[in-house]
Amino acid sequence: MADLRGLDALGGGGEEDIRDGILPLPAALATRDPRIRELFAVADRDTGRLDAIADACRHQLDEAEVVLDRIAASARAEAQRFAQRPGPLLELVDQVRQLSSR
Image (cartoon, rainbow, N blue to C red; front, side):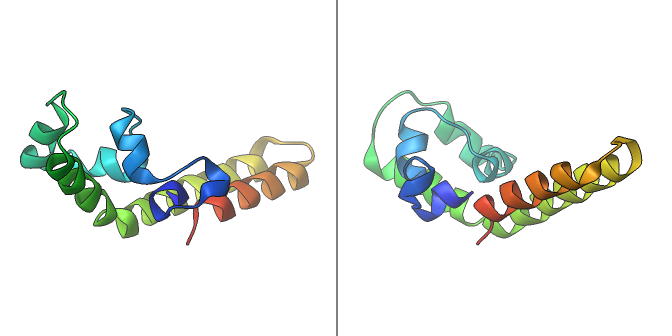
């Protein structure tokens, strides 16, 4: 998600990813809208279409954060439940979550 916010440290911006056919979580959420799904189905580099897709992705950032929070919480619970030494796993979950948060 940080890539949609233009964090170069994570490999580029969201619009570049969309142009390259990379589907970040906000884009996957945006494709639930049939109009946006149709925009993804076109294989051209029309900047207006790509801008509309990028905008739809930006509108999904808050929901994507919620989804990632749920995934992180589940990972933490699984680490606590099954790992003999959950500390390193919990640290990893927290670090990964921080990379993608705002």
